[in-house]
Length: 374
Image (cartoon, rainbow, N blue to C red; front, side):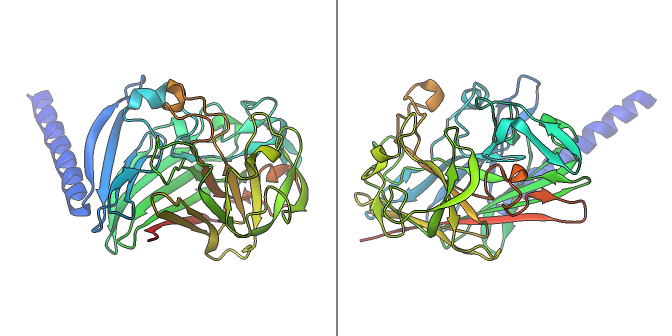
């Protein structure tokens, strides 16, 4: 009898919890649906939210991933401009970080090693001899807790995750919140926050892949790009920063004025060739400022990116192959503009520190503003 009473109480509690969650989702204007399970049995959800202008964003709590972003062209026709998969299994099989929230440290750390004080830490070498985007199982491959939210008319999801001490070799328990909001000003806001109980490097970013003509519409070569930077980070043959900066003036990295992405792309001498470079943004005082503007002439779509970060990684989809793992997206049909601190910062003393201390808060905001030109 006592067991039956406890069982009924538990069922009632679960019903109230589910009902409260669904009511919260309803009040926020965010639709939530089951989207499968991980091999470990963790429940995964798909979240859909729109603004009053018809822009629609889909996200999942697996990897805190942006699955799609639908925006109108100059004729009002909607298209998805952000690459992703339409099912969980494809993400579980592995993707090139499509739409992911990436960490604990995005981009590269040389030789998978860094030191804090006199202690050296060893990370996974998952990019040749180097560490990339948090390791073998970075934040793009874990299940976050997703909570639908509505703030000042903006709709979205607050994702939270506790990255435990020792996860992927990093020190400290890191509590993270990644909030994605779609405003009625046609902005996708990415708000990343974290706190730690031990000193640890942190460099979070969002890894959206864009094609403003619409995913599947062809190469990005005719997109016009302008970057608010006079210098880029010098890198070695493995794309690891040396600590030096190069003037972009007169080089293929000179996007101080609008240039077609494809106009000088063959001059970069990478393997495979293209862009995979970090720019040192002019704004380095921690305040929000314009980082880049992209235009797609045929559709008229334009995207401006604002951030409080010092770096912007521009990647032109050089490793996309058109196969299933690339979601059918071929070489240089998508681009990334990842706001962040400088790669390999834990190993370069002249770079601003990326070490978060227990008495500090990490806060990183990026805004993607969508519009059209006549």
